[in-house]
Length: 139
Image 1 (cartoon, rainbow, N blue to C red):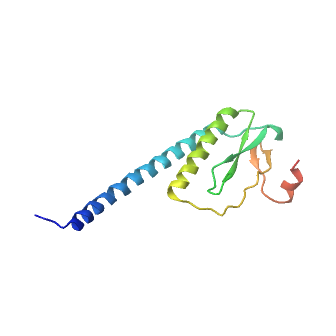
Image 2 (tube, rainbow, N blue to C red):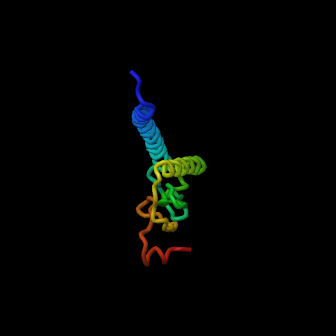
Image 3 (cartoon, rainbow, N blue to C red):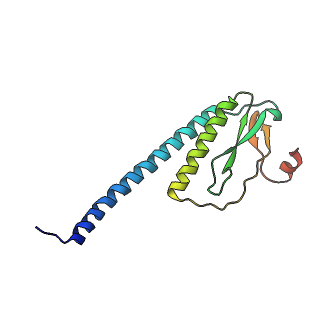
């Protein structure tokens, strides 16, 4: 059979689109899987963020907003945390999340997330809620 060239072009395009979409979805699944793996590793490194004094508590920018800057801050204790390992894993997570956001074209509100005051509450590093008490404790 002789098909007009346009019919062949339409057939090739229609067959190619589902394959491209499937490949993109597999790539996105890979990003999601790697992000979840890093998230689990980071939570393991931080552990329960046990502390005895406020001076042992810190916060690290965690996650990436599409406009730049951290999505939030993760409290941790320097007492029981391998800080260089945590910093490396968080950098890796943030970079991968940025790449994922670019791939799927995620937007955000572009609001800057301020670094929270972190304190030792009930023997655990905790972010203080915004408000008068947090403002009083800031150095």
